[in-house]
Image (tube, rainbow, N blue to C red; front, side):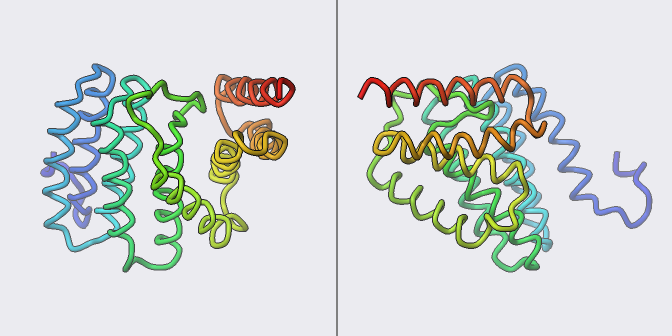
Length: 218
């Protein structure tokens, strides 16, 4: 593959794409061990690369991969892999240029919150009784959402803002369902602009109905 690349092309990006195809195939086959094997190979390549943006991109892709897999197999092992890649990703972007740093930091923080709250890629909730949300989890979620709201929300892209509002709804639904509905409505307004698949918009509507029903029954 490398022999066919034009001169000047960074081979790390090519290797990342090449291995990424194998990772996606492993996801479709629900082969967790294959996902981890290919990920380990790419991570070793990234360690030898001086470009921090490549390491950030690797962790970005692996969070995407593991979140897709977690929706199909919500296990503790996959859950921890998501958080591990988010954490490593945040550390990898510290010395990047401001705009790139903001893009990746926003991504890793919001994915940490979605994962800790057991919110799936399609906005359904994962069935994970064996992964309790601890007091430490809630504290970190609150801290991350506060940081996102202060530093990123004003300039956040619509899709990211939608995820943020869903996280805020999930965070307050047990204590203030009226406020939770308001956050869901903000997410729905963004979703109605065609930013997500119809199925995911319907999942948001189902989540809203559930919160409203619980509010009515109180």
